[in-house]
Amino acid sequence: MDLQVKSFRLEHAGRYLFIIARGAMDMDGLKTLFKEIGESTQSFSDCRILVDLVDATISFETAEVDEFFGALAEGPWGDGNAVAFIVSTEFLDLCRLMQL
Image (tube, rainbow, N blue to C red; front, side, top):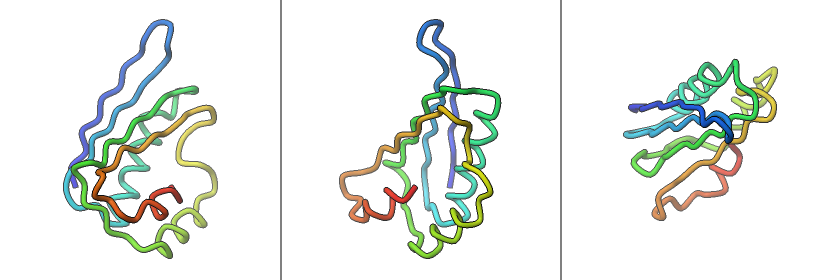
């Protein structure tokens, strides 16, 4: 999996983080993605985060996602930050992604 990360601030509109993920994304890739979001936004509040998964091939089990989130002591990003995911129209398992 390859991540391209861009961060910027608009004077009257706040901070933004754009992440484009390409390639195969398994559970380790998902953990890497969330770690990147956490590290890139740790000093921000009210950051808008857009994750483009259109060119990613997502492959992880629901139990893996449940275990990952069950082990988190706190959210992977700060309070007030909002995350949106963009997926391909061919992605059929939207329920699993909604767990994120």
